[in-house]
Length: 163
Length: 207
Image (cartoon, each protein chain N blue to C red):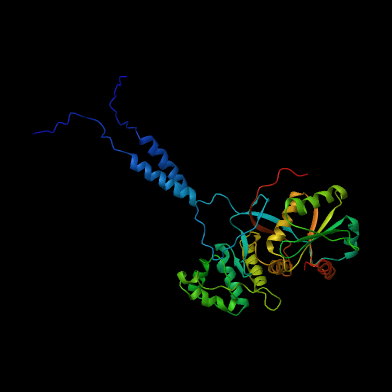
């Protein structure tokens, strides 16, 4: 029988380049579509609304001058004041030099007894609340609470012409 | 000057090793990839420096869309049980087909009386259907019921779900306030929950 003699023996060489190209193309696709990071979350603890057996006791715990109230207004305005009686309202924003600087300074002045009351207005955005909670984390303020806005606070901001 | 011309030879590299690596990586990415589940709600979350990661399961997710519509999402394992409980409360009975459709729905954003209509739509149209959100106000608070029944359904399986609120950054605070008030109100009384946020770098320098 006749045999074709090629003269060469061994594995034939296949050009792998297109296959590698395809491989890397698919890798790129899967790398880009894969979701690397799970969503982040911040934890919020709200004060218990139900069990206010002794409201006086709770109020006693905070000295008035140690309380800093932050009001979140519309249009990214933030208002803050210290104390509770006849406060002097300050207007600022969410920037580093705004509310953060104020918070850090107050923290230095008051010390660890500082208590922050966050009062978002109905006209503020959800982002504002998250931003201010974030500032609490950044400035490591130990005690803070989100509370409802009061009429007095609205009047205060109205007097400044920002409501 | 004399130039010596060296005939160019194309270098053929052995691609086999490279190919192996490429396909090894490919296999890895194919196996680990998890496609983002198509969410009916487009929510652009605000960012925070928080580094807590949300678990992927045992989660009750409340979405708040930019326009304030509220969507309620739970894990697949408890969907049917929750739907049955909700049906019982609202005097609605769901067919097996509706239940299996609901099983595949990642979150609901319609009032109870419109749920049957939504489940009757073919899957392709459901994504486009205008969902107004789960009612959550003083006159009619279905979010409260959804939460309550979902938590019972989770508890029947022996897990305590985490509650997460994923709201758009431009959603009005008044909506978020209503949702938080609903969480805190009886019968749910949830005072601890998570807010889903994007990532933000923590400032290193504080004066």
